[in-house]
Image (tube, rainbow, N blue to C red; front, side, top):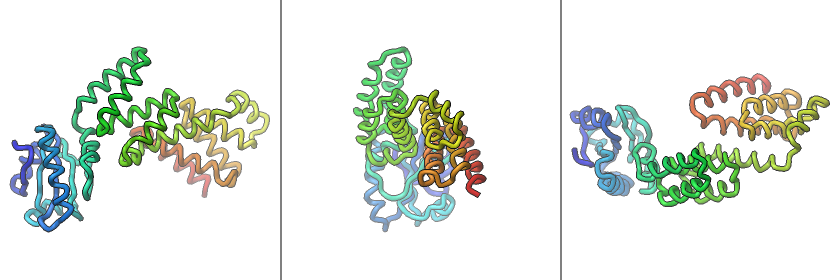
Length: 287
């Protein structure tokens, strides 16, 4: 099969759905009268040839294939759907740059940098501290691989290299910095930095035992809990602040709780369940 094909309703099942069980298919909805389409198509064709069969670019003229456009709820062109194993795994509308599209492709197509990064990760787990520098070099040499860039930012945060983490994140393309995972990492860094000058946890626990209404101590204790990885316990402390004084420090309890929702919400299905549970608890306190 060619890397770039034109698809109709008659050929769709075989050329898209069936083909997507073997490799990624980019389903490009376009129209002859669409100027943005004329900008995007050459980029997509270039990438399809550059990736040399790692994905198929399947073009759909919406004027000739209205039923396909309706089936996929296409409301504007260009619209590109990423199809894998018969399912839409990603999509975008409008014109993205070549770099931005490569970033999306990196989530579904193995790149050389993926293997190099995995080896460096293994070295780090085996105690080779120089592996972090190798990981950074790999990320910088392949800036289009957003997947490893996001993971490396989290590694920097986890190892408390906050200044390096911030510099690395600031250097990432805007489209990566706006991803929820990066926003979550940035929130963790901000919490860690604000907690540097706090009293130690044991002192704060003693303060709360003596005076449960010391909400400043309770808030500071919640920050320590986040740093220790016990985010649900931190959420409980913030809920307690809201329960005792809704207006404390200009609604600090609720604002900080929402930040933790952003952090936990990126942690897969379990994170989503935790956020849902604590949103319900928050609603009870607010009402």
